[in-house]
Image (cartoon, rainbow, N blue to C red; front, side):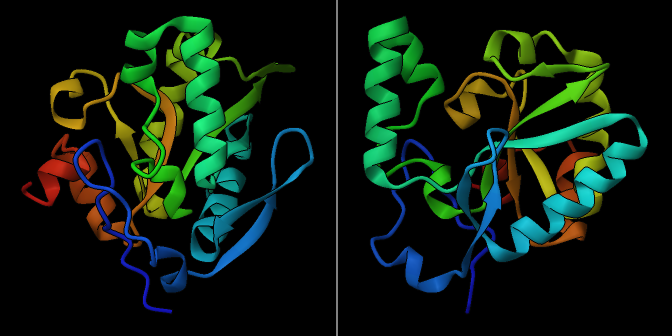
Length: 188
């Protein structure tokens, strides 16, 4: 496989139709014990990240990984019905333009102090836990994809739970150290 770990998918860049021919998808269990697809190296590095965080008493879990177009359509419609169009535009990608289609993006949740933290409002309020998670991401080739204060660049609101594997510890560390988004790193 010849995976482009730096593929840019955002509101202006649709994922190519043949993308799935360039990656190797495998399976991982989500928080509910269901199988979900994820790119193979992304899964390997996520497991290593999870092991490291477990030592810090944070049990990181997958909430979402690869999504098919129809799954993204369902999420879009559900969010629009529950929260309205403006909220949905801020936090949900249009089908075909979602990083989740790549298999390189994951949404995480966690168990901390014996409590499952999985709902977006609870996750957003868990700043101390996410500080620990985010400080460890680059060591495993991950970045925080939608950082706070970068909404104008990414096109999305702050999502501390949305992580992206970029395929290189060095690149991830550079992005983290320089407080960049993927767009800024790629100089788009």
